[in-house]
Image (tube, rainbow, N blue to C red):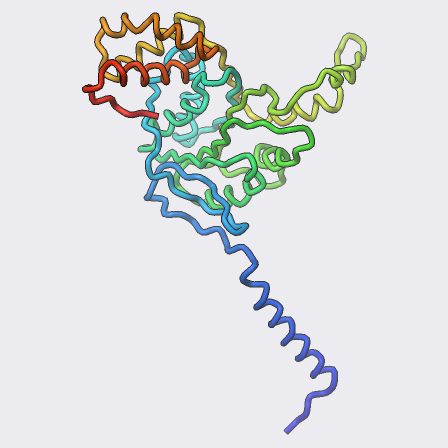
Length: 302
């Protein structure tokens, strides 16, 4: 019977200790991201647990429809066209929706899902803090037959926040081309997604007749420019606000006379809230219809 040499014995001891170490580390390592049951839902959220991410199905997605969104016809038409191109397998752009709060930005994306879910559209909602996982998420989606919108709601970055770099890479900054079945739709109250400071304007300099922004401004613009389609949303005027209120009161089963009677209260509601937005109109309609038509079977949306 042969006896192992000292060097062979040392190697065996090393391998045994390495195996032991791997056994101890294994429970601490995050498991591979498991693919969800794609037939269980049309919308999913990216969640983290024990340092591992996974796609969690949204069992009851919003039922809002494009026809429910009033007085944003131009924005609705442009993003609908882009989304239809995407669902049909044609070239389409990533979309950045910016502007006034409560003006229908996120509701528009929910409505698009309901419009095109039957054609294979799916939405993956990702929180800002989890943007570093975008490459992992895209890898899970790239071989699927469905068309995916990665939805980042209320997106903004503080000064020095490095998570935006992960978004830049997925949008248009990697050697690896993004799969053609994935787009990113993001909403934000900030036009360039990051805070802008007065002193940054002092970096702007003139070359001949041209104005050249400073490096800080260029860095911020470079992120928003990676979205091919920009849609801006503005505060509603009084007439548009009342149109939206009337739509939702009708949706809750109110008659024409009841809707007319509610107008003054709707204006007072907006005055108290300091805003004439679609969200405020929806909230007023729920309050008024609930208080004045308790027997009505109000349809629930949103």
